[in-house]
Length: 594
Ligand SMILES: Nc1ncnc2c1ncn2[C@@H]1O[C@H](COP(=O)(O)OP(=O)(O)OP(=O)(O)O)[C@@H](O)[C@H]1O
Image (cartoon, rainbow, N blue to C red; front, side, top):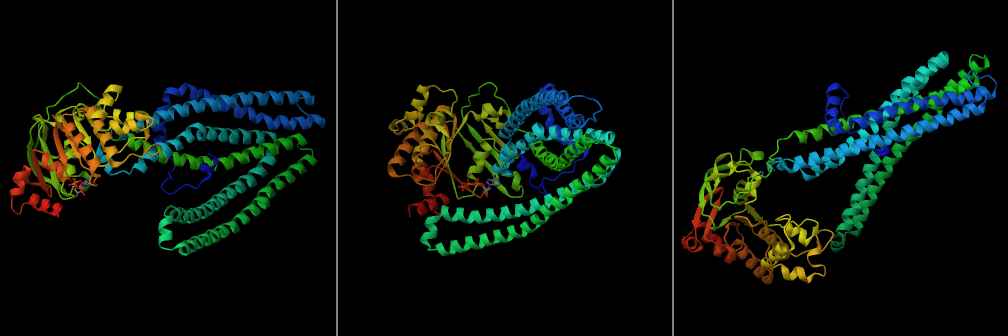
């Protein structure tokens, strides 16, 4: 954490510590309200531990004064030592309570924030995901909430502790030795602040070195990742050259920075320690003239170092606060979005009649570019149709509207003669099943991946679905059968196998409307047959829309819709459309056959 704190803050992260911004930070604090009791206990323990710690330097000085026979309050060193140990004990108890209570509050509070943000994100409409990258959303939940967690578990506590030390420490110093304190206040804080600013500058320089080093590392990473390409092009020498010139730059930047680092270290030794020497010198002269005792001077130096550390710590604390304001803004911005959450109501089972009436559509992110234009068609319940058309003609967009991924802005899309927006979203989508082009399997077992179609499905149901999807044979062929882990950390499945898993998923879901987005890359003849068979079983008794790429499927559908530039250009059975001389479909067919 210390490392993160001391990193220079980027311009985007920089926020003024004003009232509005602090209010934003407090907006996140509401997630911690359920634990406010614990938070207050933590704050009290923190205040008490900081105050008790402040008694320490004075008592340590008293120890010296008792030894030299000039003590004001105590007569034996044992007495003072016992009190010191007692204070240390009290202080460690308070510290434990503070660390533990703040951890409970921040861990639970931040788990709440993470859950709320995730819940929000997953319920946000597709339009939101068009304008955000996954990495950006990930960093809201990971990095930003992490920053807030640091703030609530550590930074706020530190801020309070440093302020108490600073205010009470200075007050004690003024009481203890007013003239010496005046002398110290004129020199020491200025030097500490100068050291801080200088330190920040040095960190920026060392960040530059790190960046350069990262650039050099990219060369190693890239070339090793594509080592076969490097070798195939006999570019070994070229890569070595590239790396060594990058390294030269690293050295140059690092040496440039080290000059300033040298200055910095000399400055610390000379100026900062010089300041301490000056205060020590003036203090010693006061001891000589018997204005203060040795013990008091000792306490004084002790308190001064406490205060010095507090001032030094405040810089990082402010940076961290600025950072967390940025983080809370970004987190709250997501929480404020309007989501499409519509918890499930009663189950609805549609028959699957679909109609598009005068539907025109442009994606919200490209409002000026119409994708669908006055689209009109009806699909009877149980009918199987194929959408055919060039890439970019609008086939997937038709599905996106039917799925209610994007709002229909012009015209009406209805299912069973009811506008799809009149259904409860969750109940409606339960009627639609998709076998996508790119089957994404979740990390986990084959069983879990099939069960995704119907959470809570029994073993028998899953097995039956796998059988219908022609997937049982290959699953049983794995030593761990349905418990085989797939995905990144498990067995890699072939394209055909993945598709059959997706088909099994859809069979379990048992939707009235089925959407098949055919894979463009062709499977080998054997897999193709298995997948086709499985698909045919899946299509039985369901309204099916196929985004078609393969002739084999198209021939079997009832009607083919040819989409051209967002319009329905041709419609009819395979036989009808092939008869149209110079028709788009018949031309497409000729092209594919060639
Ligand atoms: N989320 C989106 N935001 C903005 N424009 C989009 C979005 N999705 C698709 N488009 C645009 O809409 C048009 C139609 O795309 P669509 O994906 O419906 O075509 P398609 O016929 O399914 O193509 P393909 O066969 O290549 O999948 C394209 O010009 C595409 O660039």
